[in-house]
Each structure stands twice: as structure tokens, then as C-alpha cells.
Length: 406
Image (cartoon, rainbow, N blue to C red; front, side, top):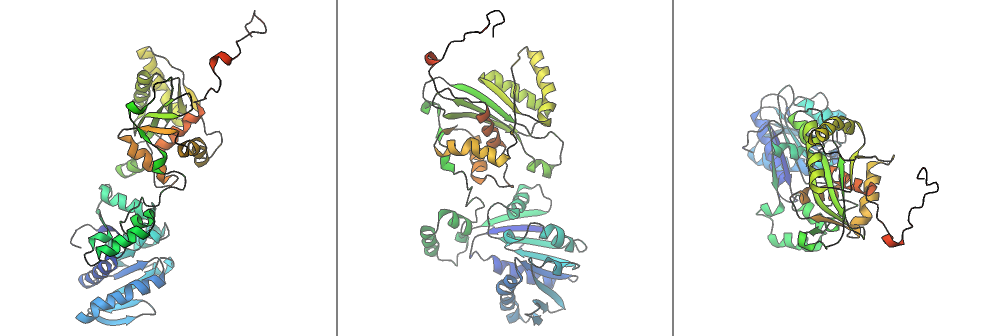
């Protein structure tokens, strides 16, 4: 309440006291600001009535602050003719044209995506009103994006907080522990621990990707492959740069049984020269059987500095151009990775990049989570062709015409 930020984002578990805090925020702002109206918005109008109308009356009436109220119109008037309106995000047109000094959006995760940007944000402009986004997570949606912007420092005049049900001293800890034992893990993490990562992907689990160390890796022949998924190289501002995709490179050893031992994942938002240098250095370090780059405009752009680097260092290597083969990204990634992952055939070398890769995988295909590392790894499928026959069983080459060698 005391924080001076104009836009506050509060992620809170169930029974954490968020509705009470929202009501106090509304009453305080309505009394403190002489112009405009104070507005509370819930996902639906019926929720606004059930959650907030009685809560406001419970706090304000004993202090003699209410001079008028209308439960049908969901309006309340405090001393000094200060107006409070309660609205539902399911009826956005009823909020157009208002001048709002303070806006509370409760259970923001359940709003339609564009209600705030197109309807609610403009109501704050003339009075430079403040806003409180509050609620329990519901996966990684617009609420997650708003929270990330608030806590990252990239969005000016935003701040964010997370509170779990454990933070409310009025809730019996034994009740919370009972819920923990009886609810699914994802439900408890989301509803009580305010976790955006709770439910996870429909396709991958973190346990699908076992971690290995060098001592765990069998001593046998491997073929090494490197696949690169390139991002754009345009210059962008700080906020967009955080959301922009990264270029990613997967370095994978494939054994005779077809297991993928992911040796390294390299990623970053590099310019053309840096990208060329990273790829060149990887080839020199790992000496891959095959090296591939996603075909497209970004690949065409990076070829010139990469070829210049090859000539300068006098080290030339073949580059295979990788394509989507007219498949949608989701289908291509699932085709390449899901079966292998569920059978335990994709193993990650213990490293700092493990957390990011697993986060991408277990949230795939969320539009608010990057998939750069997952995409780069999926391209290995187009290069790693396993041999199912021992070499001594293969026919020797016998040319039809010895003169031309064909």
C-alpha cells in the first residue's frame, strides 16, 4: 500500500487476504482523490457483486463513510461525493468514457486478453490514475506477462509482489498442509503457492529429461551434431528486447542406440558478427559430423560474416540448411522430441542452461514462454540418421561404369 509505484501487480495464493487489501485500496483512493471515480473490475459482473460489494460495506459502513449505495447498479458513494463503481470485464463497453483515478483489477488472470489495453488503460490517462493488478495465477498468460514486466524493472513505474497462503497468519497452517496432501501437486502450487509454473505442459515433464555428468556417459563411439535456430537481428528497445527470441544452438552426441546426449546449449541475442563467431567457435570446439542452420532470412544474413570468418581463419566447413518441411512448429517439435523424451532417450549434461531448457519444454507451447532451445534441439532430428546395420553387413560400392565412376 505504501509503495509509490503507480502500477502494482500482486500475485497471491487463495485466502491470502487479497480481496480485503483490494477493498482497502479502493476506499483509501476514493477518499484521497478529488477528481474522477474509483473502479473495481472482476472477471464478471456477478463476481464483482459477490466478492467486493459486501466487503466495501463491511469496512466503510462502521466508519460512517458511506452516504449512498445501489447494489443493482453496483455503485457506492462515500463522504465528499466520492464515487466507487464495480464492473465486470465480461461487459467492457460499460467502462468506456469513464475518468478513473484508481483502478483495481481482481483475478486479472481470468480477464480477456485485450480488455485492459483497449478499454481500461485509456480510462486512467487524463487523471494519470493508478492501477492494482491482483489475483491467483492461471498458467502463463497476460497476468504472467504483466507480473514479469513489473518485477523485471523494464516497465517504468511498475512494481510486483508474490504472497502465498502461508503468508497469511490468519489461516491455520494445518489446513494448508491438509490441502497439500489432498490436492494434485499442480493445483496446490498454483492455488496456495501462487505459482505460474504449476500445471505445466500437456506434452513434456521435467522428468522426461534426465541430467547426466561426464562420468555417467558410456564410453562408445558418438556422432556429434550441431543445429542452430536463428532469431532476428533487428535492434529493439529494452522492453521488446526482453521478449525477443534468442538465437540458440544445440550440440548433441548421438550414440549407436540413437540416444541423444545433449552436450551443450548456447543461446543469446547476438548481432550478426557475434552470431557468426559463436557458430564458428562451436564447430572448432566440437568438430561435428554435421552442422545445420535453420533456413530463412536470418540464415541468409549471417552467411556473409560466417564465410568471411572461414576465409580469415582458413577453416571451411559444410553447412546444411534446415527447414520446417511445411510443418507447423508445434508438430515438428513434438514429432522430433516427444517420443524420445518420454522413452528417456534425451539426456541433458548438467549445466546452467538446464533450467531454461526444461522451463521451455514443460511450458511448451505457451505463447508467453520462449521455445528457442527446444526448437534448436528438434532440428537435430533432421541431421542425426542412425545406422541400424553393422558396417561389415553393408554392401561394397560397385560402379556400373568404371570409366565415369557411376
